[in-house]
Length: 186
Image 1 (cartoon, helix red, strand yellow):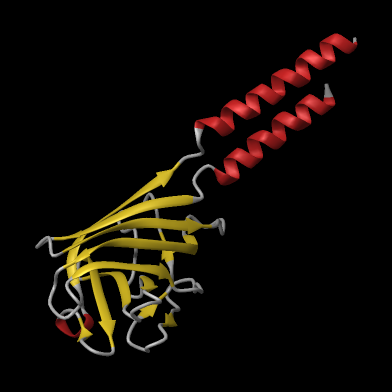
Image 2 (cartoon, rainbow, N blue to C red):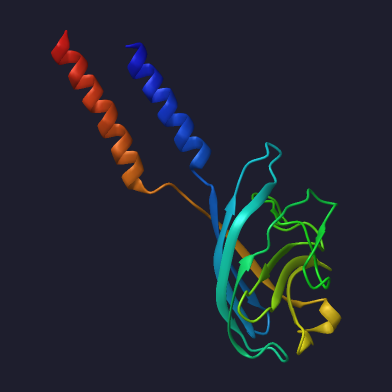
């Protein structure tokens, strides 16, 4: 009985800690010139804010000066709990790589989340400023994408990615097997 109880507790703790470790996101500018989506990997720090441990995005950016077309990038490494921040490799963006799910502002400050396309060198920053989420890019050839780096306002949506049903099915199947085994041995 102790083994089954231990297994149940372990299964619940594992599923609870991993249940929402990833978030899918989308960003669409108000003028529809930017439409990107991707995945953000998080870890818990116990405060309700989530530091990002990895991520990527793909989509389209037809705003001037950004190479107009398909864009992609991977999350820049590092996190700093706001109000502290890191500086992107170009020195053009501040970022903290924290999200705040379940709050009215998913990114609460001007530092925001930073990505870099390793092939083109274009850096991308999503941040919150003047009551709106913003998207900006920078590259050595074209400079900033908009308003000296203040960004293109739009809508940011975060959605938690739950554990696949197969994991739950496997877990309950294992518990059932242990129960049958125990019944057969007694």
